[in-house]
Length: 316
Picture (cartoon, helix red, strand yellow):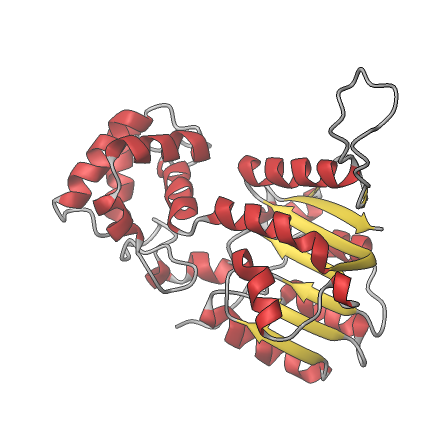
């Protein structure tokens, strides 16, 4: 295994929106290599607390080592943020209703540079590797998923998650090869994609890029995890608590935007009613109407920040 590395995206913008202060409590549900967390830790030290989630054991080990010098009271949880509520309660951490909760929270839905660059993880098709794509390094691999999924279901996944127009023809070929046992590596899948979608052209993304993205989302149930997180996170934020979320996919950002808008404007009354009768109370307010995106200078240093979008929310 190579050394865990990750360049935190939109770091200065995250710090600006979170505005961490000494003694605060911080929840990081996508800890990674602690790129964001280490900067927050330096600002909430020496009496702050941190709870960090990541389902990747490599990330957990790297993050713990990086955060150790700050001497913060820390809890590290190897789990998906899909299980946020259950995992926090299992460790006796009180929620807002019980007088607990967090001052600051961050979710970064992107892959880490380590996960992309570590060949054996199978997230990239630049080098031949097993068709894996598991963030947790446990459970069903991408190759196993493709061997059991129906071509109809896979076609829907390819179209819904990555807007692939050739989804049905591509899904039929992928499932046929996977069931025959002849689709086991990243390069085999990439070559299959090129045969149906066309070969790479200068200045254009590789045709397999969006296919890998859709399959990765499905293998890791990424949208299901995001929906569960957005459902549960409000009960874990203190009054005045600040939440930042970084997304990299239109499906992710749409979910975040809709959730924050609902938190801010929860009224379900028909527009024709002159006054609200549902009596639903806003949970807080969005920090900025439009998402923050990477600056040209950041993109020059880290091209993987290209599709990143940051949204923030302050809870009442």
